[in-house]
Length: 348
Image 1 (cartoon, rainbow, N blue to C red):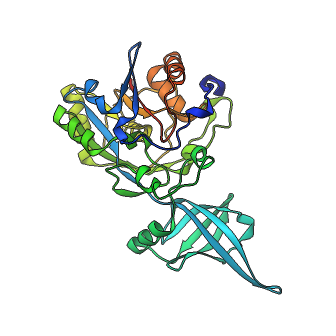
Image 2: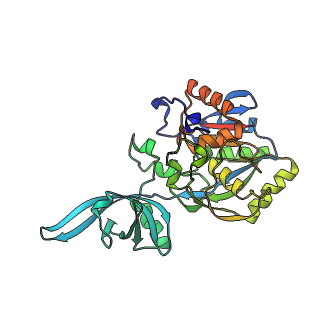
Image 3: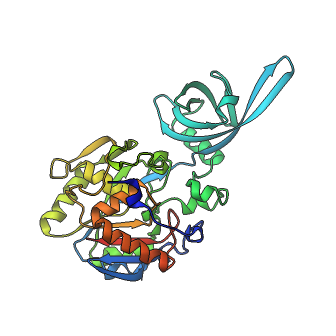
């Protein structure tokens, strides 16, 4: 299974830099069996049945992109250097692993000042990353970060424009609750309150799980034999309540439909023994063709990067030839791609 098997040509003009407004007005490609239908997200009730269960990731994206200044006293007086920081994952006691640019301009023990309220000291350098010790923790840290930080837009959007205040709304789900992600579960960005109410009235049920999406979700696959790729690990939790809800839906004959690849990877991690169970910890599950799904019956997801692990995941669910035809249709029909783009509902 070669990396080139998951490649396709994507015109740059199809990469979305802003989401649809309202959220649920985004286009929806529905792939059901061999049929492809063009729809809109607000018409999800056309395709979902009473008794179906949507599994939603309730992670909350933190404004993980920070700009600060490092001052240094020397023989020539005090010098300063601009340091750009992207938080990657929390460690213990107020420490964070982070990308620092330029890393060579700061030494261990030196401080980066972001605002009067927020500062951090570089305590170590590890494998091209820095370990920062912040001067605040808990709610105080969250408040200072909300003031100082910007949303960590994906590289393919950040290359086209800078993050702004609107992204703090747009790049967050309406049900975001548990802080810790540095990337959004983007299929969930299509849901607004009117759509959730419409789905509930239709008899669709909801289960919330938590997977903190990491920056590793954007790392390219660098091996030609995809089976040798090593996934990054992300922290997730399936509560006893969530596991019981999913089991009950399966027993009643309803469909379990994760919204987004993050929710799918999490519930499949919790169901490796054949039945979903409560689960908490790091998952580096890698889903590619040949994978046996235990609980997932369908998937709502955005359109993914060529040669990405997410292309491999949707190919595992639908089959490689089928996904190729779906993506050919999406490109020809000018669907909007990636994090702020349109959605697909994949019904194997």
